[in-house]
Length: 143
Image 1 (spheres, rainbow, N blue to C red):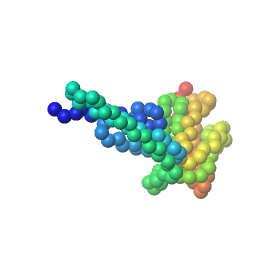
Image 2: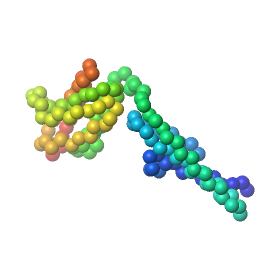
Image 3: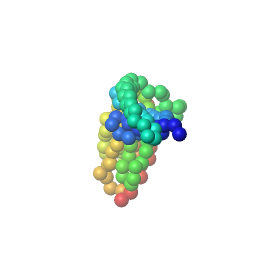
Image 4: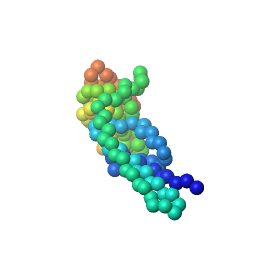
């Protein structure tokens, strides 16, 4: 019987997989460390382990498909994350239904902004604007 190989992938020091191949669906801009440790454990033989580490330097990202310039996720009753899928500086503005500004958050393209507004329950608007982009989303804050 041949050797039994095991694979241990880590990305930025965190476990990322144990199969022969690894798919990384997305990476933020910046440097990342990717390591693969292959352990060769044949029966009744000395093992030959090898670890390979590479640095991934992500300097750009692909454009989002048309209509997906802003990705919005609700993470629970009162926690939200918004990401602008293009370069530049933007502002996320939280408004009441009369259009009155309640909160303002600076946001950079490709950098997720997570926020938990300390407002009473109700319906609000989130407007992301800048670089020629205007995106508006209704937010329901549960009590």
